[in-house]
Every structure is written in structure tokens, then in C-alpha cells.
Amino acid sequence: MAKTFKLLYEILKKAKTEEEFLQLKKDLLSTTEQIMIAKRIALIYLIIKKADTEGICKYLKVSRATVAKYRWLTEKKKNSKLKKIINDILKKEKILHFFEDIFADFFIQAGIKKGHWNLKIEHEKRKKREKCWMFNWIIN
Image (cartoon, rainbow, N blue to C red):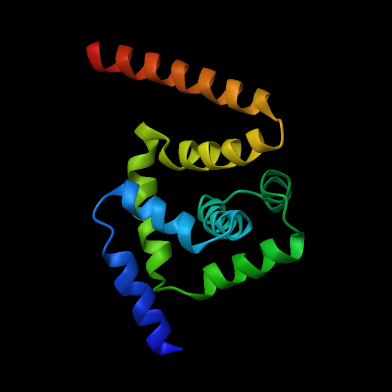
């Protein structure tokens, strides 16, 4: 199994741009697998942000047991690399709302396939409002 992960690392390392990485992700993972990984990262992100269990369950459509498991794992692993990366991004997020946009874009694209166009429209409106706010903040 170690050789398989080394091969995976070598393959992902070859992606020089975000576009290449996204193409590799599509080639390697089914839509379901992509959503599962995104949900796990979102779950850890929301736990680090101290979101309540009910909100996480509702937002990500996961069980309370799943939230409890990841909350325990997140608190247990003090030296988690993923946790450190998310914390670093959270420090910058106050201005950019980075993760909200990533997860909204990802779940909206999945939703469009199921006919949820209203999610896409609402997300685009929010992005426009934030861009206007950021522009006004920068020029003032």
C-alpha cells in the first residue's frame, strides 16, 4: 500500500497549475468521492471554527455521529497537518471568505446537475455584494 501512496503522491506532484490538479482530481475520483472528500475537509473546517453540531449536520447533511467522530479526531490530533493548514487559511479568511466560496462553488456545481439553479444564482449575488464591499473598502 505504501508504494501505491507514493505513486499517488508522484502523480499529484506533477500538477503544476490549479487546472492540472483539478483535471487529475476528475480523472482519479468519481463525483461521489469528490463530494465525500470535500465534506470531510468542510467538517474539519467547521469544527475548527467552533460551529455547533446541529449547524454542521444541517449544512453538510451528515449525521451527529460523524460530527462527533471528526470533532474527537480533530481535538485528539494536536499536530495534524490538515488542521494547521486550515488554521493558517482561517487567519487570512477574514478578508477573503476563501472556504465559503470554495465549498459554495463545489456544492453549487453538484446542485446544478440536480436542477438547483437557485443555489447558483444566490451564490453569484453574494459574491457580487462582497466584491462591491471589498472594492469600497479598498478605495476608502
